[in-house]
Image 1: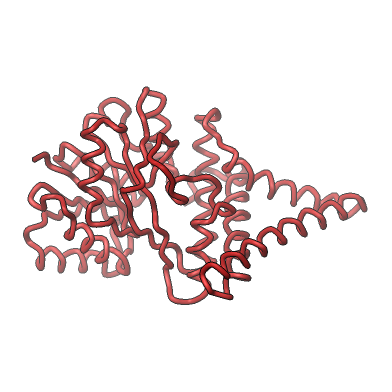
Image 2: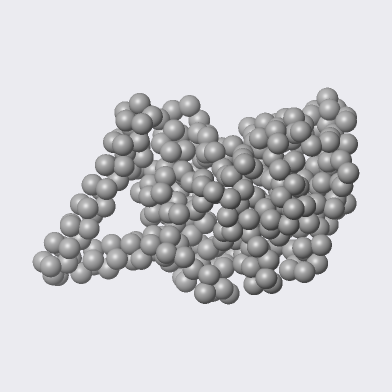
Length: 331
């Protein structure tokens, strides 16, 4: 049986790293044919202690820690891949819990030649117990929040632009290279662009499933989506032909609001148009909140979903616009 290397970048993940390791340990794939390489960005919490305790309690699962001195996701992934020895690479995240058959289905799809990068569907889970965390999880799986991203919405098995995390045959990296360390976010998408440009396929199989733990509050959500937008803008400078409508809408919307807000100081027409756009926007979000509240029987969604989606749109859009103004060294 081929060796599978599971690579995981992490930094200060004491709340979730144990859940990930437990999920890996429970995989249906032969445990003796798996190794886990965790690239830790010199965590300052209890992450390393939790990993060490898990190693001691489960000696039949090979777990290795490598230092990620640069403390970025792509540098950590590259460190882990270079230290790994597997015929297959499965990239996971410290915020996820793969289903028990996750590895088995990834390797099956790769062996069948379904794609050069194979991934599945996220089931978004709240990062906390309150209404804010529940609202963020719902917004992170709603078309108004994430557009037509199939890995968040589900659907049939198909060729897609990108998948979360991904699994690969090792020789793929010989053909397209490792992760781009100049990008602090969007490294997965950029790798998938190179795969597609090399004639490869990115394949989404909805039977491959993982639970992803969303951010617990609006502050962390805003930071996350600002980074997403900022680094998406940086990536698109190198690959302008890969932009999709869902990626363009937030910055166009934010830019439009900013321009109309300035023009509204002098022009009545701008004030009227600005009011109309904001009114329609909020109405759409509140209708979506009501529908989700009814389906989930959770009245807090009436307010929570619109707030979460607003944070996502304005953070992503302003981050995208900010990449033209702020040096790329920002983290």
